[in-house]
Amino acid sequence: MHITYDKYYQVPRLFLMGYDENRKPLTVAQTYEDFSADHANKTITVEAHPHIDCDMPTVHPCRHAEMMKRLLDQLVENGKELGVHEYLLIFLKFVQTVIPTIEYDYTRSIQL
Image 1 (cartoon, rainbow, N blue to C red):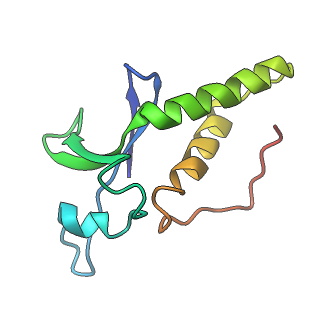
Image 2 (image 1 turned 90 degrees about the vertical axis):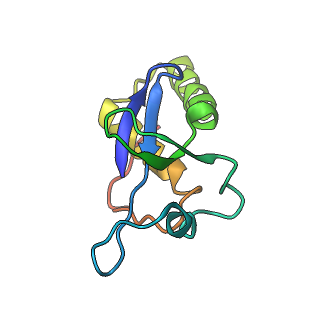
């Protein structure tokens, strides 16, 4: 998992790369097996990684930019702020709907 910053959408952007049991990089087709069928080839596209010379599946930021903006607007209305680490945790939990095979440590809670 590579998290970069998307300047256009002004949100984190997730690029994905996996390895098989022989430590060989997964093909794009193999990587797509881990994605929700509702999101493969829709929310997830194959694009050039901005810092590494290769194409990778990426969760396109347009949808989560909208969702994160709504969340932040609600917090501001309630006089609350979200720390960067909390923002990233919420972002990763949102991404789990697209990539259900990612496991997270749920021992942390965020007060919204």
